[in-house]
Amino acid sequence: MGKGPFSFKRSSSSKRRPKKFIGPPPSPFPSPPQPMRSPPTNNNNANYNNNLGVVAGGAAAAAAVKGKKKAGGARLWMRFDRFGGSELVECDKNAIIRRAAIPARDLRILGPVFSHSSSILAREKAMVVNLEFIKAIVTAEEVLLLDPLKQEVLPFADQLRQQLPQKSQSRIEEASPLDEQDNGMDVSTGRQWLPVPEAAEGLQCDLPFEFQVLEIALEVVCTFLDSSVADLEREAYPVLDELARNVSTKNLELVRSLKSNLTRLLARVQKVRDEIEHLLDDNEDMAQLYLTRKWIQNQQSEAFLGRSASISISNTAPHLRRLSSNKSGSLVTSNNMDYDDVEDLEMLLEAYFMQLDGTRNKILSVREYIDDTEDYVNIQLDNQRNELIQLQLTLTIASFAVAVETLISGIFGMNIPCVLYQMNGVFEPFVGGITAFCVLLFFVIFGYARWKKLLGS
Image 1: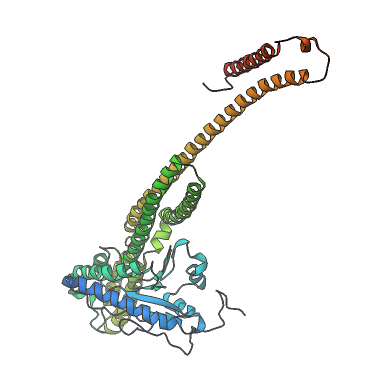
Image 2 (image 1 turned 180 degrees about the vertical axis):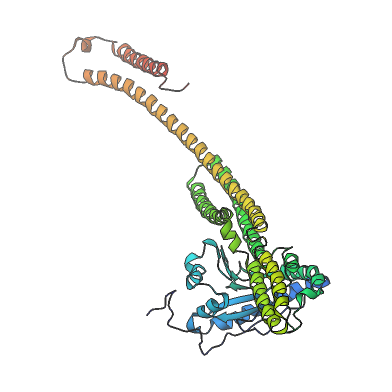
């Protein structure tokens, strides 16, 4: 059985463990990431320098990893938690499938075959993001970024390191008053359950973690496409103006290469735009992308079941009925709480859809300018072609007049007895008369062509 994208011959439990290169020690796959200390706001420059050092160290580590044969099809991933902590890990396909709970075919979408395709897929516990060069698996707790050391992926990784800690800190400060309430603590077991439903509203007052990552990805992709379009515009207009002034083989070759680049760029922008438009047209797909909301509902269900079991042991039946009735009412309320509300995601997608639509309009305007330049060049070439045709017609008329004179001269050049041969002084007048007749014939035909508008003015 060959090594295909759906090959399951090699199991994920290989002898080689995922090697860690950067960041804190990696937690086991099922466990959620531990909160990390948010960086202070007055050390942004130092944090950015540290990020550069992390990337440089990761590049050196990746170079060492690439020098060895990766067992089981392991690939390099970078893991980000919701606090901006990052680490480089080497995971195979089966480990990623178990960790993110996604089907195996989704990993094929992130492969090199679909390198320039764009898709955002919603799964039960994860979101598969494939936008241009960004290939990531997003859950409610972490982000797994594929090939993080590529040159075009590094800005996305830097944005995640810079923005996730700030947004997570603001969310913690907003949710801290809710943590002080007693309705969210299970006293019997000592576990912290998610409050219902006030804390859920507090956690959802800002964009969920997965939408923060999606927003950063869309921002990086849209910025990259905008910069590409700006570079194309700066290159296109001088080349087209030069072609309009001088139609040459070199300028035509430059315009041909420019049109090829423009077509490829338009296709890439169109793919991202169509994917966002597809999500905006389907509310069910957008609702499935709310991973944090589904995670909160699962936690609430587990909390309710645990409390019901604990209360059933310690309390009497009437009290249990009354309490379970109240809790089940709040659970149903939280489960049905704005499940179909996709306004936040819709506004986010609409903003970037409009930005991509503007980028697409810029490309179309460049293409229209190219088409106008080509039409202008074709008009110039048609005008030159018409001038050549007029010159050819004029030369044809002159050749006809000269041919008539040559015919007469050829007739008299034969050795045929003629009376004119014995007349003295007749040669010069005869040649002058023939020449005058031919010139008159030329102007007559030329005037007729002008009268019929076969020649320009």
